[in-house]
Length: 130
Figure 1 (cartoon, rainbow, N blue to C red):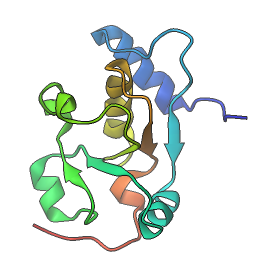
Figure 2 (figure 1 turned 90 degrees about the vertical axis):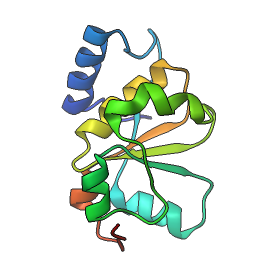
Figure 3 (figure 1 turned 180 degrees about the vertical axis):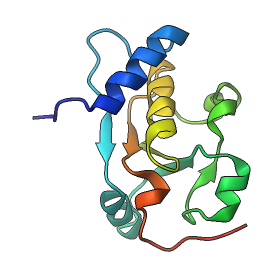
Figure 4 (figure 1 turned 180 degrees about the horizontal axis):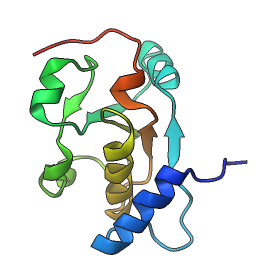
């Protein structure tokens, strides 16, 4: 059984409706994972695309080695370059921008997107700079 959608999801969904990118009616609520779950997935070598939607400057200050920096404000440009069926985790600083990116990706037909709750602020694993 899936947990009840979070308040953050409700806010992101309301915002998504306002800009015309809400999840389809009857669709499942988004999947959220913790940074601990993400770290386990990466350590296990699971097939996962990790997208960091923070700005380039934020990304360069510290990011997860496997992450691709695809800023949220450029989603319309980079989303078509990704596989919509790939298992994809989206991370930002706190989880709000990644939740927005998740909603937008799902509205574009992505079916396996996960928002990383707490974002890099909650990440305790190794980071790279530059």
